[in-house]
Amino acid sequence: MIIGLADGRFGLRFRGIFSKISEKKVAADIILLKLSRYSAEHLRLYGRVYAVDPDKVKSRARNDELSLLADKLLSSIENYSVKAVLVSDGRQSIMVYHDGGVLKALNIRLPFIPLFQRTVLKWIAEVYGSVL
Image (cartoon, rainbow, N blue to C red; front, side, top):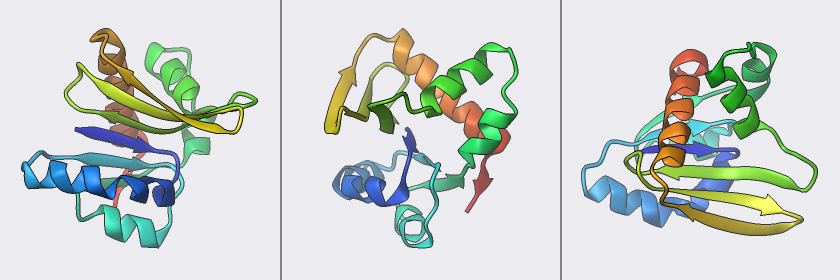
């Protein structure tokens, strides 16, 4: 499982889900874009935590596909911003986002979209992340 979080404190809302994942012995990679020591320490209980500076990702954006996808996943557009992406196995994901001040969630079951999300998140963690 791979989890992208815009803010670690926001991610702590998912502790119940993370506990169930951990109990099933599923390895989780958690990517934090806004780091706080408090949230990093707690999230470390559920998997490997990567700290990623989103400005670094955006400043190094190239014209290849992964860079373009990463930029779109990390950017906020007016009233829309992604808060969390949870990809279970590359076939299903949940995206939590703010839309006009309202927190919404989208369960995605079209296999190619979670596969793109998983690929981009793993690439961000491997290229720009530092393990905490």
